[in-house]
Image (cartoon, rainbow, N blue to C red):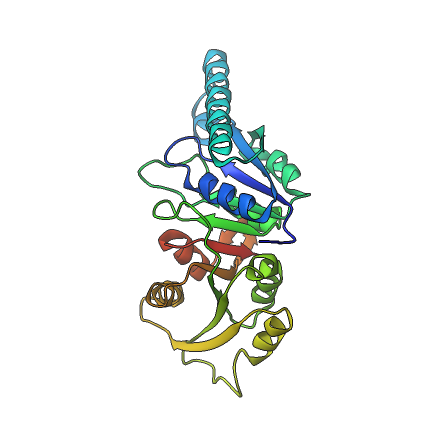
Length: 280
């Protein structure tokens, strides 16, 4: 398969099954893209602890050493995955400082086509995973492929689903997803009708025309909103229709430079069972 995606990054989980790395490797291998694993060494300073009392120097040194050791071990596991996949990969150990707005991580994302990151796993939580994901989508503004914590170990492009609201953020996500949509056998545009706004004409027709011009085999479906919300409606449709991956805009707003995810975005990220490509 050919794609215009030539440079990919994946945030390598410190522990667990590292499904996001497996998905990234399978995708990079299939489209012949360069894949770099970002092994993150987290800042040992805890804001709450810092307010309570001065931080002992030996604690800081020890915590820092452990963070670097964990990052290097994750990087080595990623390189082994690359060898098993027959894929030449690159690994970078990246300092993650919560207080600096993840500037180090964002610097690595400036010149890449796609970042892959795993859904947080409550049983094996990754440090700062939620705010890290928000930083990728909102501050780095890079297309981000989120991988479920279980059940998915390779990227299957065949049936794509596009969550369409007509908003600018939705349109931006569609444009960002075109390199992957070009790999799909079919794409289904899904519009959730919440009953509050009368849908005039043929909703989604303009998007269908746009995608058809990009040679995407597309159909449009309008579905009623479930009481459990738009996110649950989208994920329910995806399960019923055997969707392989989904595209949607990442919604949120900034509060003192900290982005807060919108309800639908957070719902999907919490309950996702398929890879979701998001862009803001």
